[in-house]
Amino acid sequence: MGERDTVLAELARVVLAVGRPHPVRVAIDGCSAAGKTTMADELAGVLRARTERAVIRAGIDYFKRAVALRTTYPKGSPEGYYLEYWDHAAIRDQLLVPLGPGGSRRYRTAVMDLPALNAVDAPVEVAPDDAVLVADGAFLQRPELDALWDLRIYVDVSFDEVLRRGIARDQQWMDSAEQAEHRYRTMYIPGERRYVDEVRPRERADVVVGNEDPAAPSLVVRV
Image (cartoon, rainbow, N blue to C red; front, side, top):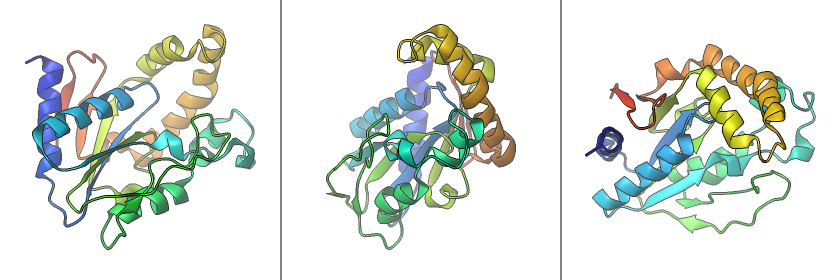
């Protein structure tokens, strides 16, 4: 078993050890390009292989606020990115609260398309009480959402690595490496530095995955 497989197996053990009378809501938190989505997909796969419990996979990017409604801060600003990109009410009301204590168990995994231009008519699904939600996204430990998670996993990488991976990943849809670098330096990284400084997600998380080297991640478990 490789180092990444070992970490994923331990993460699955930690998740399945969380006891709740309602679905266990797991946050995979971290900065841009930290590897959150890949880790969440892999963790969901390991969980499905280890348990018969339903595993719900959700990407919080499908709960962004419509672009047309982001009007409080200048376009492309770190303030707009940090404070206005995500629809916290929808995340709470459509996903996390229904799966929590006394919730209806009727949830949706998307309200917007990825460009956040059009609403998505995702079906309402019903979760069993012993389900596990694995949700990945940025800023998941913000005060608007923090109390609604049952386990917080922070995927930790340096901002130098965020910049390197972000340029490599996003240059195609941003038209050039230069445009991707500009957006990371002027919007994404400043917004995420604010989150790291204000919320201190690395220190507050139940589990920290050091993902600077994805082939050999490190693991700190505090639960």
